[in-house]
Image 1 (tube, helix red, strand yellow):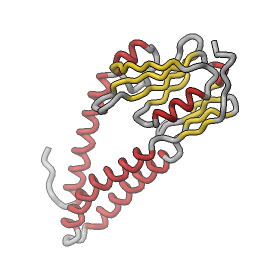
Image 2: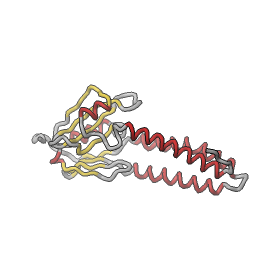
Image 3: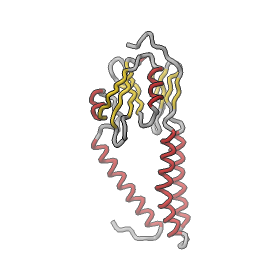
Image 4: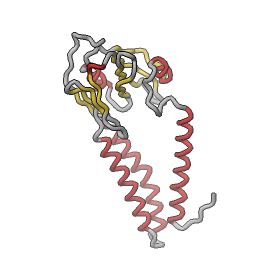
Length: 210
């Protein structure tokens, strides 16, 4: 049950600013050599216009993702916990439904240190809201937790992410803790890269052999 002595306050947070900067720099570092080579090969043959179109499409997609990133937020305001992700709509939770708030340190992938997970659940233990520390500052997660009408429970000893999903059932998003989905994603990524390479070879007039 919510702590009757706890009080809520308006809090509004944004994701780590370094995420957008890193994504922008990575996109430039990856795309510049590729399109530079394509321009080098196609300008003499007069086929550079197709490369320009491809380049504009890629840049437009990057700008759209970047703009979406700037719209991501989480807040406690007006008795509601609200927030969204880059590719997810805004979720709203009435704070009266909040029965437990956990701040759990986990080991995620190849990250050098533990990553905090903010998990908000109802009286039945179902996940209402979750924020992952690899996208948010730990201090902001703590601010959101403190703004809810339940005293947060902090787990200081880091645990493996699989143990987190096991110890907190229902906390995983649909795309997490699924080995088969990870394999399919890798295969799709390889096919996509091969498709882009084949398209680039067609643009520069090189035959493709599969």
